Length: 114
Length: 114
Image 1 (cartoon, rainbow over the protein chains, first blue to last red):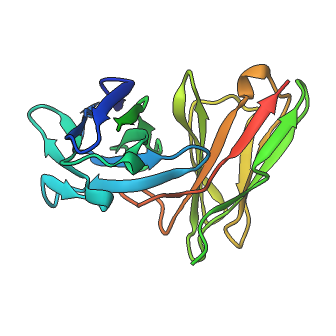
Image 2: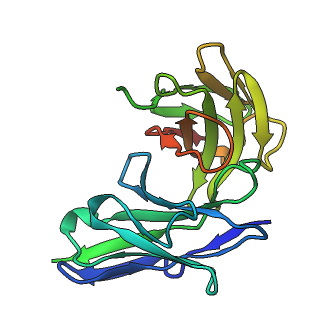
Image 3: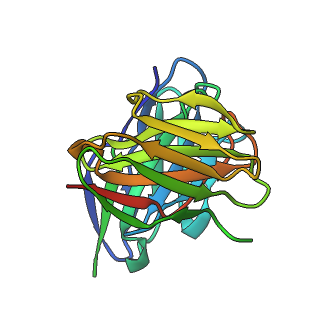
């Protein structure tokens, strides 16, 4: 069975500071990994996805994530936080041939301090 | 191109009633997945439909069911509602079924069971 762990249900950073949201996964097969963002009263928007083509994945809005197989991690980063980045972020894995849908982490609420 | 639409956006029901939620995928997308989002359990996969056939189902009781029509629109039904069914129900569409297919999410239907 696959699972996703997001460390920190809430992360607070100052505007302009580095954003680091942590995600660790467990999967018996090479996974496909995703980061989604959810703004209040909205659905999920895909930020980026890992498909084994490159370990460093660049996404939208200046976010990127690095796949580290040895650490089973897929942490999300952004060099400089903007107020508009305040939202809920979800890491997800799909390693079941699509059979189980996406397995999501519990989410991390990103707070941006002015 | 229009995004995924879900109707209604908000719904209030009482225990024991049944409810039907609707999802219209992005034009050309043939796969529709449903997820339940609650504060306690997070995002959980309900089921996936592709070409009018249920492809996969998550670990939910038989009270949760769905279907897909020939135009790829999908409905999910919950019978004999329980308080614990209060949640945000998200629909996602993708061009194909299976792993590594980018899923586009709708805004969700917020169901409150009283």
